[in-house]
Image (cartoon, rainbow, N blue to C red; front, side, top):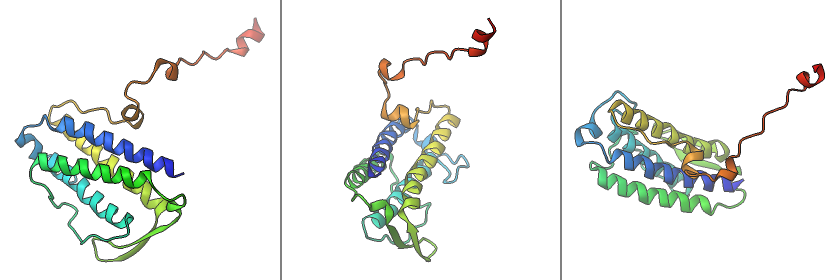
Amino acid sequence: MTAIWARYARYNRLANETLYAACAGLSGAEYRRDMGAFFGSVHGTLNHLMVGDTIWMARFEGGSHPSTNLDAILFEKFDALRAAREQMDRRIEHFFSALPADFERGSVRYVNNAGFASVDLLEVILPHFFNHQTHHRAQANTLLSQLGHKPPVLDLHRVLRPNPTSLSYLPVPARRDRRRETNA
């Protein structure tokens, strides 16, 4: 089962590369414009993803992370955030490519941002970790569209296989209608 997490980590990296390439085309004003999203702007949304990934990766690796507001701006400049994102994605991909066989059967103990001690099963938290990223990338994609920019395709199967071979996607033969054959 650990192979699926490595695949999601690879998707995460590639999807972030694609999204950041699209965001690089925004003006500074567009990048910071409060559009009413959870974290306001593209800038706030991308920073929130870094906050979340930083916290969860520390927990997965057996450490902790000081309580941080979830809307913290870790990086004011897009280029610095992009470089940190690339480093984080390499960290995530490396971590999930080398999981012990029974990793997802464990749990993670932590103090959440509200100060409460928590224990969560990894079989719940691992999907949350990757779903959280997808959720906020979709918000950033929507913001790109609202700002008049073409949002990139971030569907998992198209990010992992952007140019599928024709053999992989042969048309399915039409089903024969046996009712018509018996009535003929």
